[in-house]
Length: 240
Image 1: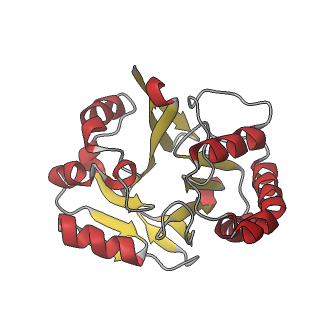
Image 2: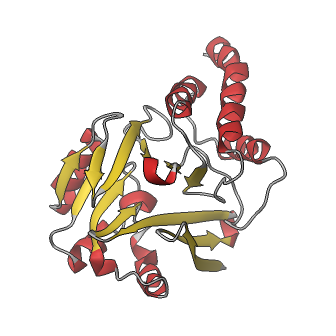
C-alpha cells in the first residue's frame, strides 16, 4: 500500500511525500514558492508524477509553474519525473552537480546550470547554497542549504525508514539504524567529510528525502552523526 500527502512549512515550503508500506520508506519532493516562480528539489519517479501533480494542486501549486528544478544526484527518485516537468514547462532549468548536469542535458535535452560547491546562487530570487557530498550514496551527490529558512534539504544523507509523520525519541539513533540496515553508504569517511562541511551553517530544520523532517535541535542530529562517523572511521580503515 502507498500513501501520499502534502505538508506545508513556513508558508513557503511544500513537501509532497509518498510512503510505500512494502519497503517501509517515504519518498519526498520539496517545492519552495516565491513571487517569481516555484523551485522544485527532487522530482520523484515518473510513475508517481500524476499523483504528485494532483496533490500539489491542493496546496495551490500548478506543476507547470515550476521553472527551476534541483537534482541532488542522478537517480530515479531524484530526477525520474524530469521529462514530465519539462513537458509542462519547456523553459524549465535544471540545476545540479557538474557531472550530473551534463548527463541531464544529454539525456533529456533540458537546459542545465552547474552548481559550484558552497557557492551561493540565486534561483527565483531565493539564495541557494549547494554543498557537494562526494561519494555519499552517489558520487555526484549534493545537498541544499536555504539561508532564509535556515533549512537543509539533505537528499539521502539524513535518512530513516518509516513515514514522514513518525516522531522518534532519538532521531540520531533511528537514522544510524536505518543507514546500517539499508547499507547505502559507500564510506563513513566521506559522510564524515560532508557533515563537517554542513555543520558550519546555521541550520534549524533538516528536510530528508526519506523520513520525517528534523525540526527540533537539528544541530544535535548533525553532531550525533559526526560522532557516529568518528567512532566508525577507524574500523572502516582497518577493514579496508
